[in-house]
Structure formats: structure tokens, C-alpha cells
Image (cartoon, rainbow, N blue to C red; front, side):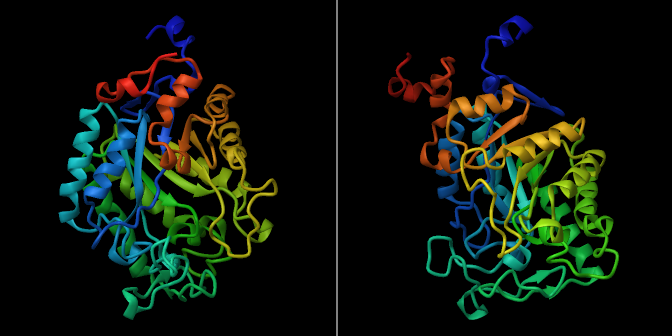
Length: 371
């Protein structure tokens, strides 16, 4: 596409090249837990859930938080990639995605001290399950529970930390084998990596706690090991909680900016900028949870860190708003979550709202009349 041609395309629908991957537009479906697995296996629910959003027109779909170990899942119903046997169904989903001209990523993570909970829509959705209820013992950087509804984690030893790092590496290798286009490391929302980053949850006195450099060590080692074990042309994303919302006693945007520079130099291509989730006492965002409340984090990283792409996320529902984020240089990619759950064809409707013609699956073309 020539420069003249690209200038007529709304920024939200302009292609985006990152390493060896070119996305057809800047719309990404955020990872959203489905709580619909048994023993970590993807099934037909995931096929229909992901497939409908792939044909819905997003440039990239990121599969929900996927446990690198069985105890790394948020709930017993969460997806996993801790067995070689998990690869088969995931590879079929990747194959379908590519047949439809789409791209797919996977978010790999470990829930840490926020693991062993019920499904979100159940009465125990925000409360830890006992071992008798199908839960398990949880782990963390320090023996500090997230809140009274969660278990006190066992403090990881240095040897156990290395084992978890290897679990991330093994998960990444399986993701490559399955055919994913992107890997995103989940370093946000109070899960294991996030809890290592913050001094409110990490009170270790060894090489993985105390100073900023020590608290980020766990994440940096995961990033470096994964980068060494995936193809050079494969993009690597990291999702972070850019602000813990507890002031200087916790993780702040200043910390995120410094971390972003180190992640860039360690081989990360995009920072997915979310917030909160690590401290039960936090008051989320002074402006409230409204459209755009997390955009300043993406914008701040873009302004401060050259050579690192960013993604904006959080309550984004309007096409013009999303388009302006890209146009104004506040984000390279726009991640749509709940709105895409509500409408899998949001990308097609967004194009219509922006008066831009996009291809519609021929099976559905009569449902999307041209303006």
C-alpha cells in the first residue's frame, strides 16, 4: 500500500508491523478468562469463542491467561499450557485463525497468590477454594495474602523461582509449537510476576526482593529466557499494571517507565499497559473506571521509551475514540475486551462507523449492509 493510499485509511485500520509479523489493523482482542477448561485443555467452547472473534475482523486475538503450571491457573477451569498434550487443540485453533487470515497470540502466566479461586460467575468466584473444594496451595514472593478471601502463599525458594522460570520457558516453547504468532507474558493484576514487582507484596531480602533491580529480576529473567527460546521474528509482549494505585509505597508509573526501558533492551516488542489488581486497598483511578482511564499509561510509556510499542486497554467502546488513540500517538494497538465479548463483530462495525470498507466473511455479508 502506497503512502498516498495509507493516508486515506483510518489509523485504527492501518497495518502494523512488529518484528516478522504484520497485523491487518490495530485492533486486538484482549485476553479474557473463560473458566471453561478441564485440566487446562482447550475445548469446543474455546473454538467457538475464539473463532467468532477471528472472523469478526480483529487484527490480533490474544488467548486468555493460560497457566504455565497446574497451580499457576487462576481457577480449576482456566486454560493451561503446562502439558505437551495441551498443544493439539491449541494448534487446531491457530490453524483456523490463519485460514481466516487472522493472527493469534497467547498470554502465558502464573496466578501466584491469587490462584485457586472459583469461576468468576460462581459464589466463590472471588474467594479461594479449599483443597477439598478442588483448590490447591498457592505460592508467592512472600507469605502475604492478597486479602482475607485468598490463601497465604508459601514463599518461593531460589530453587523454586528457577523452576517457575523454566515453566514459563517450556510454555513458550509449546506456544511456538502450537503455531501462535505472538506470546504475551502476564505481568499484571497481582498475579505472580506482578506480586514480585511491588514492595507491598514482595518483602524478600535476597536477590529477588528489596531494591527495584531485585524486584524486577524475576520478570527480566523470564523475558530473557523466553526471548532466547522463541523465533527471532516472533513478537514478545508483556502486560503490566502500570500503577498499583497506592502511591509511593507501591508500584508506580515511574517504576513502569524504568522497567519498560529494560524490557525493550531485553527483547520485548510491546508493553500492554493495564493497571491495578495487586493491592486490595487500592482505589482504582482518580477519574473512575471510564473509557480511556488507562490510556495515560500507554501514552506515558510511548513518550518516554523509544523503540517500544504500546497497547492501550480498558473500557474502550467507541470506534472514534479508539481511532484517535492511534492517530494521536497514544498507543500503537488498541485492546478491546468486554466490548468484544458483547459484540464479536465490533471491528467490522468500527470500520463502518469510520466509513472505511473492510472485508466481511461472505457467509455473513448480508448481515452487514454497506453504507
